[in-house]
Image (cartoon, rainbow, N blue to C red):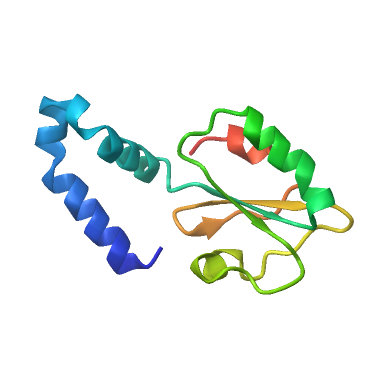
Length: 121
């Protein structure tokens, strides 16, 4: 999520644009990366203990959200190093897990449900 890496990825996608358009079946994974980029690299951070988070995680498992990254952040203990910046400051709501939907490195206010996923940019 560092800007220099995002810029490098976008440049790489741009350099291969014509090849991907000419032969999309050869670039399946790269096209998925482009789709993720166009969706704002959406990430749902679920902050709360496992009992609070389980219903939200279960609902996410039933949805088709191919470009969404999901991070569960337990309130106890430090977050894993690769996601520490993403989950920093994300707290559970009062008595419920909080869902923070982030796109383009900006997170919305927390909600108790996944309704933010239905609001496409």
